[in-house]
Image (cartoon, rainbow, N blue to C red; front, side, top):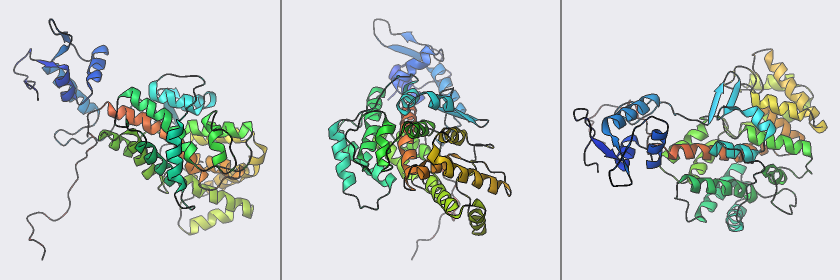
Length: 418
């Protein structure tokens, strides 16, 4: 408990670091970050090692933080979330201020993940998982029915890896980063391969490839896959990412936070959307013309998959980047032509542009992957982004993601039901 509450009527009252952190709803180290940024003043305790803070100044900073984050006084709810990870504007998006498409064109998925997590690039970084973690995850996944979908497998693998980690409740930054660098490759290694693999080494895209298709990889295709992972690593507060932040706000460990994201991702309007685009593309290729296929979609009242994005009035920049790379793969030409036919045909009725799901479908169809492969790519890629958001949320006030319900039921008191 605080010995003294901040009181505007008593200037000069001081708070300890712990008391200031409680009032601000942050970790003690974040209090010192405020000091280093000039947002808060501190005074050393005479003869001691700690610092004290002006109560009125701390209270003013707390009010300002609540106001900037969209909080409503007294309810504990917040309408927006401050983040330093991803910015989306004007048909472009940025990771920590850097153009995400340019970043994905020049750096591997692992390097981009490190950039999101730490704000630093680690050239040549490769994620590896201890054999014990991989063995537990593989054993759990192997027990699932054969028809199990990729997101279910990944969620089970995440839970199994959590059980194998007795230190999973350590939410310090270094510990969470250590978990992240193990969890991502564990998820990939736990997926059953579609062709024999000798070693799970090298860039993550190389390890993921044999779990997506039985065909041999070539450099151009691996480059498209690695770029797709980098482009999909984060996309601001998508539904799954919001679920991750809610879990992290309740101080769920990283494995549980990722599991929450995977649960939301499985919806047909989110991670599974690429599978719908994959099937549409196969049908267009089978018929040789997009017009009758699109006509059937419209007649059935269905939204044409792979087109449009609420955040981009124009073409999804992720789709544009992948289409450009896919042009270098000769076997992708038919699927690429079919995708352009879908866009052109639909444009006669409504000006919708291709989104990343259609670009992923071109990759999965042309490389002999199943319809669920796009969902797998999406989930593996987004795991790194989810952990970046969890890290950010661990530095905020606990349980802040608590909106108030707007009750619209019958007013009490009501009689007891008979």
